Picture (cartoon, one colour):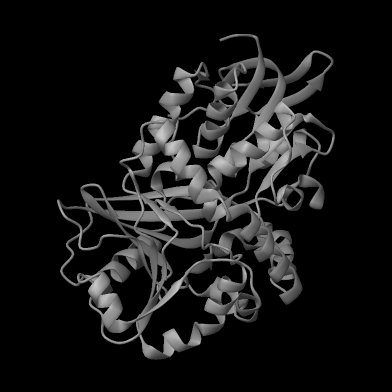
Length: 412
């Protein structure tokens, strides 16, 4: 590998690849470093939604009121591995504070600013990388299976609309007409018409990697474990890596915390373990992603398969997948589609989670030679092109995007 580069991007997930593509397209020399295949991990295993409606942070007053029971209930959509509780305590304290009414509202407004042009940016990017056929413009549904659940969601509907989210309230007959494959019996749905959906997020991210390479980005298989500043630039080291760069961009998702600390910032990042199950089928029974809100996961009609993805499990990077969480997803899927056989495959990946549900994007506290682009939680796929433009603004000297101040590392 080259011993020096203008820009080193640490991490070949969708965020790192979007940054590499943007900067290589601007004529910059870019090296992308990751031990895994570009676009693997959470960039592959997600629900495929470009979720312009995802303005609610994970931490809200309702979540705070129910936090003990949520975290300790093995069947909760938000759960914790008991063995990880001592190490998670400082993060949970910050999360509780960010769930208070004032903080939750500020975080939602910041998310709304970030998400405002996520969909048009993905339309432009997908066209540029020959991914237009993968990106579907059919919206997304939150499904409330009872009349009581639908009525209880009215406050959430009002809040999302106040944040500028386009949404329509559907009755049970309207939902059944839109998605005849759903077993609708009462209740209704929130329809988010502006949301986009990828029928194969892994293929989309693969095309993004290919497009970045076609623009001149190079890829190195290695793991960056060491970062230090020197007069000649930022030195990156580790297995398979020995490189000095003028700019180092940390976009390593859930693996970013130690590198950020070496750059001078202590970021409260913890790991959410996400799961999905898949059933192979020629024609899935849905035409757009649907989230049964009582279960907290998404049912997604991927190309040639049905994917059920979601729930939050705080548990670190080292423990094996939880058979209980996989069983809960399987049970939840069968509560919707009773005839589903055993799934053809299951998967677990890692999401980087910050207590305020906002990513960390921008320069490190000790200088813009190291820039951060991680911590996106559930909206990394959604915000990848927005994040790329924010990082490009720093390096290319462009005007900052709306919302940039709210996601700086200095907020901690």
